[in-house]
Amino acid sequence: MKSIITGFLFLFLSLNVLASDLLEEVDKYRNPSDSYLMQVKIISSNEKEESSFLVYLKGNNKTLIKVLGPKKNLGRNMLMIGENMWVYVPNIRRSVRVSLNQKLTGEAANGDISRMRWAGDYSHKVEKKGAKEWELFLEANKPGLTYSKIKVWIDAQDKRPLKAEFLTLSGKTIKTATYEDYQQTLGLNRPRKIHIVDNLKKDQYSNILIEKMDNKNFPDSMFSEKSLE
Amino acid sequence: MIFLLLLLPLIALSQDFSEESFTVGGRSSYFTNSSEWDNTFLYYVPEYSSETFGETVGLRRKLKLRVLDYVSSDEKVIIDPLDVSAEFFTNNNSFQVGFLRYRFSETFGVQFLDVANPRDYSEFIINDLAWSKRSVFGVNNTYKWNDLQIQLILTLWPNGDRLPYKDSAFDPTNGQIDYQGGVVERPWLKDLEYGTRFKYLFQNGLDLSFLYYHHFSRPTFLDIKFNNQSLPKAVPTNHLVDSLGSSASYVWENWVLRGDALFTFNDLVQEDLINYKKENHFQALAGIDRNFDNFLFGLQLQGDFATQRHFYGVRSEYTNNTWWKPSVMVFRSFKANDQWLQLKSLFESDDWKFSLVYDNIHGGKDEENLFGLYRTEDRFLVDVSFTY
Image (tube, rainbow over all chains, first blue to last red; front, side):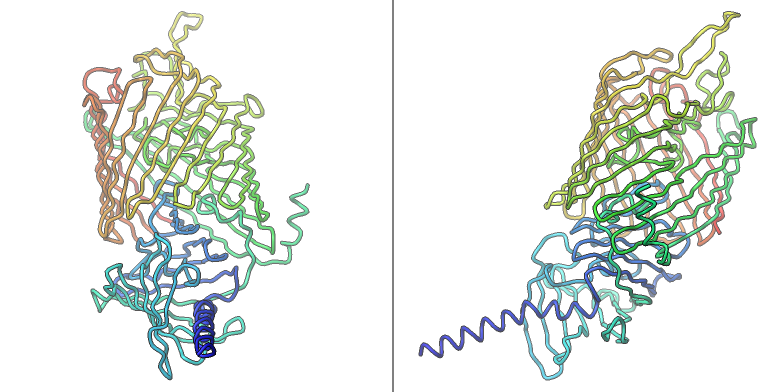
């Protein structure tokens, strides 16, 4: 009897260890290192022009986003520290504080490119383990995040993310993202395209295309409001 | 010298980010009372910035000038260095030198907490906020340790306010006395301004800062003096004063709460139309705003406890259109004797910007009110620019 209990306890603990490592395993496909630079393009069904951004990410809580285009949006740079976000407004030549779930462009929210890691922000459980896919349920463990709950489908073999449904607190799906176009980048197969669909208006979508990715160590001091100007 | 050494590792690195643009535009105001166009000028804004980051150091260079070429007056061509600076980064420290503009305030509109920079008052306070802050030359060091930032600022050239030019619609003397207008000149390396600011971002999202600053009093007042022929002359006057200030911002659900406060010792405070007095000056401002799906909304309360002028402001902008952004703003005193209503329509494409603004000013008949002197200067402002 004792050995059965020990066995179950061991199984439970190892599953938990696996679970806590699991999100980091999923995150590594979208994050090549602790500090990196990426250039993204966003094409949205309801926006005539493409938007381009240069994104500086460091750790789980520092992101600086520079707008590269279109020209009329130049200077509308964004800074995220923890769950706090600032946007530079060129018309009034100053940065202002905004909430993290404010719309960036099309169906993409600021948090969709500034917050690329789930580990640490979300607690999770494995809901289904299929032969090809696993289904995870993520719940925010801090306030102020872009999404309160996320359903994530990952590949059963290599744990790369395939699809995510972003839910409200009440459990209603607001957006669905699919991770596509996996290509060898910085030593791993990484998604180069994230397709986001608005679940309330199914014909509206945004494609986040990762055009360039580079490991780079940025000084902490550059993640300040001054860098937005 | 040490910063030149820090730059060495960067030589081998390519630029991470750079952008350059050139904007050419024109702006003019139509004053409905006099049925005249005035304050007409062309402007040119060349801009370049680049960033390079190595393993532990970084360099950011900026060049942004604004050239104002007046058509409606004999004003000289004005070259404003908006931001001409080099900024050196180590992991926890950034050191910036050049022509700089600082932001201390968390709120919109009046921004009395931004004491480090002079202003452009060529169109009184109804000047577009993007135009109004003038740069100073100095050094700015910011040390960042986790969520704490400590800033030390030394201004070597304080620069001066720019006053409405003579005989313009906003000439405060109304052409009755000898008045120069234009930029208030200040010498380099004399009457230095300096200060320090501590800013802490709390875990719950409260962003709180405290400031001490030694600076020229703002705004500029006019002393009436008599020359040899006993003719009255308006002479710009500022005194060096000390200020303590604080700012805070906090995000609550989708609302952003903001506040600023400033206490200035022995400040120059307006008493009536031509007189000012020296006394301690306390100003405070609190605001709340929110971005809705299609529009943003903001409400602010402002109190000046020396002049006893207290205002509230409401602003809303329609944001659900990429090429047209209309907005409305009302700034009104609680006594209802001062009011500024602004209706703005901004049209923008990738290269072109066209903005049409209507400013309705109400200052009663009492010229001691904030807007009293300019109560007849309702205007339409037209601004067209092209960026390439």
